[in-house]
Amino acid sequence: MERLDKIGNLTPHSRGINLVAKVISKSEPRSVGSQYDQTQHQLSDLLIADDTGAISLVLWDENIPKVNAGDTVKVSNAFVKIFRGKMQLNLGRYGKIEISDEPIGEVNTENNLSEKESFQQGGFRRFSGPRRGGERRGRPQFRSRQEE
Image 1 (cartoon, one colour):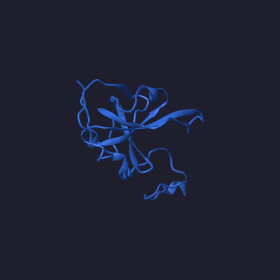
Image 2 (cartoon, one colour):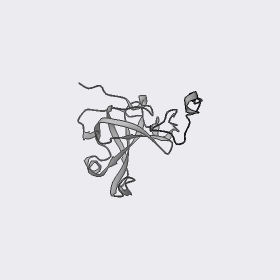
Image 3 (cartoon, helix red, strand yellow):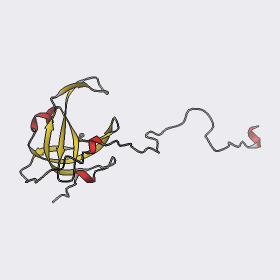
Image 4 (cartoon, one colour):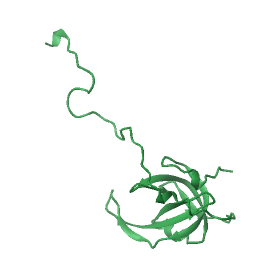
């Protein structure tokens, strides 16, 4: 049996998340344009909760009609993303959502992770490749006498 995560333990860097939660609310789908290929997609925000907390879950296109408010859902292989300074749960390409018959008791909506400010820590370059310009920073370039 796979391990199940708790919403209250999620961090901005959480990946491979598997959890069971109750859908508290579901927004009306809205149309958004893709930043990659300019196609239109449907998007809906859900608030899901378990006994440790609540978080916003973003559903796209074909996943939207699968669930409704009041349903208990099993989310598999999700990840946390920071959007406008707030944590949200996303399924991504490899994630799944399905209706679950697992009983879920009382839920905690007071600890809503999506209402708390989160700042993703940087400190690394997301891309690699040569730098523009000639010399590398921090290292003087020595030339041999033969080159002069």
